[in-house]
Image 1: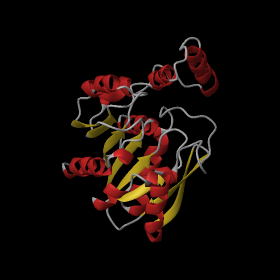
Image 2: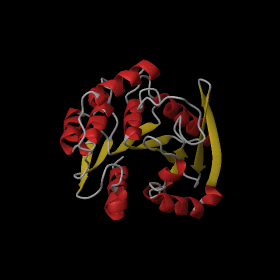
Image 3: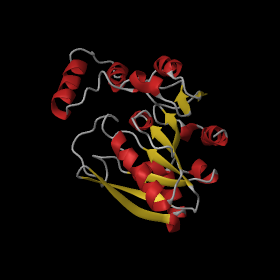
Image 4: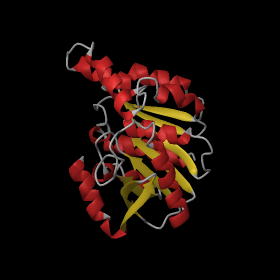
Length: 256
């Protein structure tokens, strides 16, 4: 995935510009691929991933007439930051990135593509108060119900006892980073979404179980669709079926 992302970046390097914004003292960095369109996608990688990883997901958006912004999330890559909050605070970064695209490049339609925690960040963005109209919708690859559930499922997959590790870890997260990652997450805010959403999920996902994402999907009242993939571990869906993955996005974007 990294090598294919780097390959796509190199193939489109003449259209790439290094960009940055500042959010409450944090310098945040990204790469903007300007193909001359008036629409753009912001690709939001999951935990501990950044620009190069995000480039792997760019192709269907360029094919559909979208410029592409890949970013280093706070605490990752070149961007500043000390603590991750699983989208609870990071959504304000995405709001500013969207404003940057709108004001500097005249982008009037912004789509969000989030992977894992990036999907939670995208959802928090689109359910925030006073959302600008140029944010039009999102694609959620491997969204989860809560990060608490994801972490619990990781422990179970390694055949280790859940108690007391799960409880200690989330107590420390709340104590150190000041965010409640147990009682926040997509399952708590999806009902507030009013923008279109495409769920992309694998039946083999051990960390965000299909039953959990079905619960999130049922709570969603906005225009929605879900595309299931037979193969692909968490955040490794496209690599197992690039044609179906890309066509799912293309079909979704054609509707809006």
